[in-house]
Amino acid sequence: MVQPRVLILRAPGTNCDGELAFAFEKAGATVERVHIQALRGNPGLLHDFQILAIPGGFTYGDDAGAGKILANQLSNFFADAIREFRDQEKLILGVCNGFQALLKAGLLIQPDDEGPLATLTGNAGGRFENRWITLAATPGHCPWLRGIDRMEVPTAHGEGNFRCRADWIFDGLETTGQFVLRYAGSDVGFQSKIQSPKSKMLPFPLNPNGSQGNVAGVCDPTGRVLGLMPHPERNVLPTQHP
Image (cartoon, rainbow, N blue to C red; front, side, top):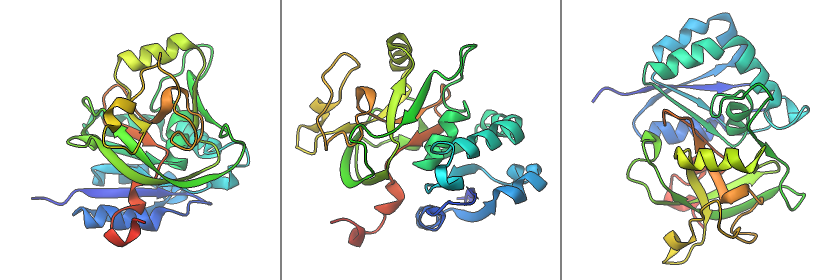
């Protein structure tokens, strides 16, 4: 089998690129970590890879909001290149800060004339949350999650609260199957914890940030672009699990 090549995009403040590279390497990929300024100098570099991954951290200190400056760079400098990359049936992943950047760049949910349809804002509890949680997956046509129905992963974020601008937007994204990961209970019957948009919110800490509909991960309409708040790259080795 040909090894897929992964470009891990880093920027000032990225701090999870090493863990993400290790996870991809354990899965059989070859990985190159590329600084955003290097990619700006050579956008054609993307052609050499099959996967683009944006790791977690605090890019640019989250000074204008979590992932916002990186999102602006993606929109202003790489929007066409990234869409071409996706349209070639290649894969894109954003974890935590990478999820925030993909969402705010409009690469997961296309904005309309009034602006973004959804965002990730401050945790409902008003503080940074670092804890282990259980995720329930409904993969649909998202290849990232094929064959997965649950994951135990750690979270580490202060702005993971997924919110849509209006209820009709949430309902529409639900209908198109873009909510592929949700916070869930850890009991044996955890599938019963998967919440529909009309269901009651899971309590803290099962839902660590108060996300609308318990949403933890979103894919784009093609399924090939995935963003999620928790960190699957931090549960790769048995010794990493509590």
